[in-house]
Image 1 (tube, rainbow, N blue to C red):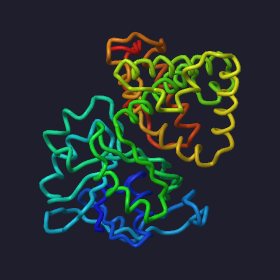
Image 2: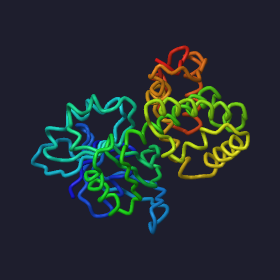
Image 3: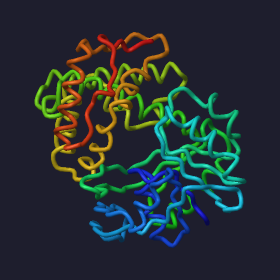
Image 4: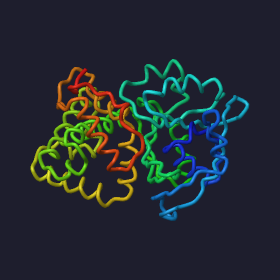
Length: 338
């Protein structure tokens, strides 16, 4: 199978490296002028959790990069690991040039597919959720790879999902198939939105883990976000990971606090992936806003714009992430409704 990966960012490089290492023909489509910078490859420091693989890989990913695309290139699968707010524009530039290729959209979704379907028929794409993450540090991709989730957007037959999953499975990447990937993504997005709002309110990850009230607020926010998802018609009983957030017992909250503390302080994979999750201030604002556009009033963050910038800067400093947070544009009061 010939695979095209859009860009050479964190997620695309992680999966491109793994698929290429398994023997697939993988090419990265990059912006003009960037292919030359990648001629010598990309330094990779990977925590590889695939079964039977060397747990820590440190070396060069000799990626193939191109700055142009045409139907004659014969790609069978295009992997699109972009932010959800850039997806429609990216697809608009790709679909005709990609010929008959099928697409794996490795991105989040909250608004459904109305913006995507006029550009790319549902018969040609599936959604995915990366169980991977990391950050670039001094020119090296420091990352972790665990698995991937794949499925059709809204319960269609999963023939295409199984076809897209095949190269990942051949590369030894654990792959879970979902019959309704949008519902799965909404659940993940709701949990993330609730926890992130509490994280910003607490001021730092360490503060959230130390403060019992802040941890309780995180659970409450996530639970209220999940209620929005339930109102959208998602059967939360089908997602066992939500049970931790839907209960209201003191014991469950204690277990949650212990689990969060242990994972972020001791789980190397979680620490590497959190560097990716905390690295995009635009995405941070979207995560805070998006899950509450259904007329449902929920938990709110009362920090002002300047204070939110300061707190997000603290996260980036804590994770040693690079660029400033001036792009973060949060309203003075973030209401969990629109």
